[in-house]
Amino acid sequence: MDVLVRRLRPDDWTAFRDIRLTSLADAPQAFGSTLALEEGLPEAEWRRRLEPANGVTVIACRGGNAVGIMGGYALPDGGTAMLIGAWVRPDARGTGVSDALAGEVIAWAREHGFERIVLRVADGNDASRGLFLRQGFTPTGERTPLESDPAVGTELLVRALS
Ligand SMILES: CC(C)(COP(=O)(O)OP(=O)(O)OC[C@H]1O[C@@H](n2cnc3c(N)ncnc32)[C@H](O)[C@@H]1OP(=O)(O)O)[C@@H](O)C(=O)NCCC(=O)NCCS
Image (cartoon, rainbow, N blue to C red; front, side):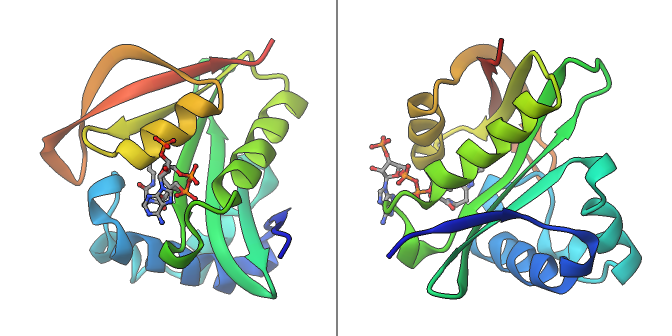
């Protein structure tokens, strides 16, 4: 069955909250944030994150069900977009959902004139690394600790958009 991707708007905030909290519960080792930090966030904060001026959040649906999410926002340098929050429902992995999501976030970044798009991958997250290497990202060797667990390292990957 085809996967449909669409960019969320502030009025989609409950759908966004549901899948975001599900992703944080499912894969805590993959994200800089935590379920504990986000489960109590107010409606205004979920809506704020979905304002087009603050970036993009893309949801993937198959058969009417949300099966994945990915987002992007502008870094302060103005030329770089950061891809964040990538998650595919476990029973939908390996079926092209992540490629559809990444394609839409990259399309958003191109539309907004970014020169490059970057993301951070936690050490040992081979599924994510494999996905983004296939999507044309390359390792930079630039390393920072994962905020939610500083014992875990992350590496910055980059893809030029020009
Ligand atoms: C990372 C993630 C979004 C990739 O989604 P996906 O749909 O599995 O993506 P792909 O189909 O491109 O598969 C990616 C890799 O996982 C492997 N894979 C495929 N099906 C799989 C499955 N059912 N379970 C686990 N891994 C699987 C693929 O072989 C591929 O590895 P390779 O490119 O080295 O061959 C998904 O695994 C996920 O949500 N993980 C938890 C959250 C996370 O790690 N987010 C990334 C933060 S940077």
